[in-house]
Image (cartoon, rainbow, N blue to C red):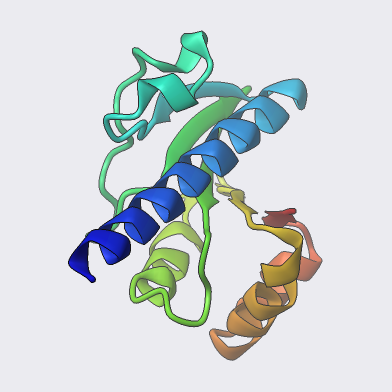
Length: 142
């Protein structure tokens, strides 16, 4: 039994890292330069250009999965493979939203599988972040 739960954890981790690599590519296509990314000992799941970037810095006890810059504005990125049973999501959403740089709110980009989008929207509503999502400060990619 422990072997299969370890396998499931590895699969979720691989899925997380593939989502993160995909998010990094999407953000770069929008002109955001990826400056930091957490490849978590899985360089084989990431494009070559991300493999030597530093890990993101901690904010309020949480580290985003990636950071990027577009002009003078920082962007944060998170990949989520679970919403309802993710013990860190509330703290992460609070830590990465409402931050400002040069008088502008720092955007948060979250990538999830399509079937988790509604759960994530509900989570943001419960945390009082739905307005930020509606105005585009929080962007969900699926």
